[in-house]
Length: 260
Image 1 (cartoon, one colour):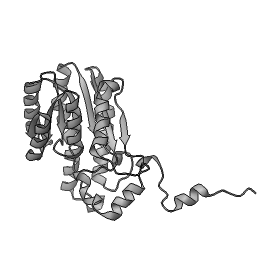
Image 2: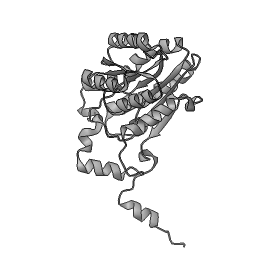
Image 3: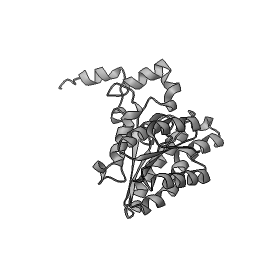
C-alpha cells in the first residue's frame, strides 16, 4: 500500500467526482472513493486501485468510519474533494420542506460532515488541500431555489474556512462548474430545446465534460496553487460572463447611433 497519503473524493462513482478521482490518482495519491451507490464507488476504486466506501455523506457515523479506514490504509488525507450532489428541479413554492432539506443536506451539510472528519486528520498529517464543488448557481439565479441556496452556502463556507484552516497548513478553494455532461444533467440535456439553449448561452460553444472540471480541481489541489486559498474558480465556458441577448445580440453589436 502507498502510505504517502490519500485523496478523499465524495460522489466518486460518477460524473465530476469520478473524473476528479481519476485525475488525482494520476498524481500518485491513493483514492478513497465515497459514493452512495456502492457499485459505482467500486468501479471507480477498481479503476484507480483505491478503496471504495458506500456512504451517504449526510451520515456522520458512516463518513467517520470511512475516513478512519482510508487513513489506516493510505495515511492521512492530503486532499479532500467534496463533490457529492443532488438536484430537485422545482421552484420555491413548488418545493416541499423535505425536498428542500434533502438538497441542502447533501449539497451543503454533507460537505460540513466531510470537513469535520477530514480536517483533523489532514492537519495532523501536516496539511493539505480541500476543493469543494460549488456551481454557477451560487453566483446567479439558476432556476431551482434549494440548489442555488445550497451552492451559495458552499461558496460562503469556503471563504469562511480559508483563514480558519491556514494555521494548520490547509488550503481550501471551490470550483463553480457550468453545465456539464453528468448524471445530474442527464435528464435536461436529453431535451433538445434545453440542450440547444445551453450551447447557445455558452460562449465557448459546448457543454462541459467532467474532466474539464477535474483538471481545475487537480490544479487547485496541487503545488501549482500553493498560494491560492479562499477563492472560487468558475469553469463554465463563459456562461455567466456575459448578458445573453439572444436574437437581439446581432442587432445590438451592429447598431450605431446616428450623431445628432
